[in-house]
Image 1 (cartoon, rainbow, N blue to C red):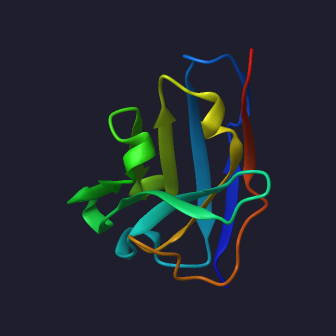
Image 2 (image 1 turned 120 degrees about the vertical axis):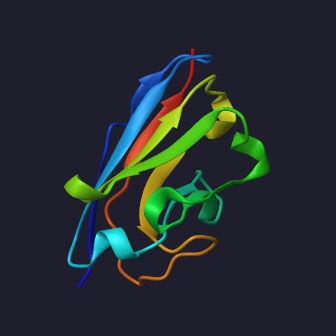
Image 3 (image 1 turned 45 degrees about the vertical axis):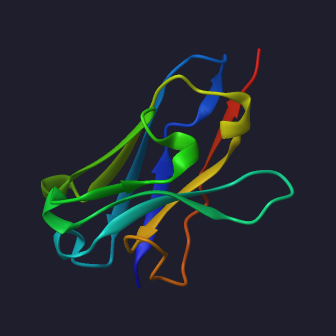
Length: 118
């Protein structure tokens, strides 16, 4: 069964930066497209960004376009999300999962909380 362990969240001021990591086990990481998702308080979980296997393509949702960068290290089974110019509306719990435009796995990690506030 796939397992996802997200880390790197925290409290940051508007305009600040954070780098999230997701360590993946239980699946052939390098063969899977991967994605980041987030769930803000009182809202449904939504896709943030996706990356194809082999890093041959990426997609970003409009709210994060130009500010977030998704990447992966297949040798370390790790997915990353570099977040720049953070805004209060980026406040959410961030999760990773397999899949490019949607999550493929029913199992989710605990996520990592990002709070953007002054």
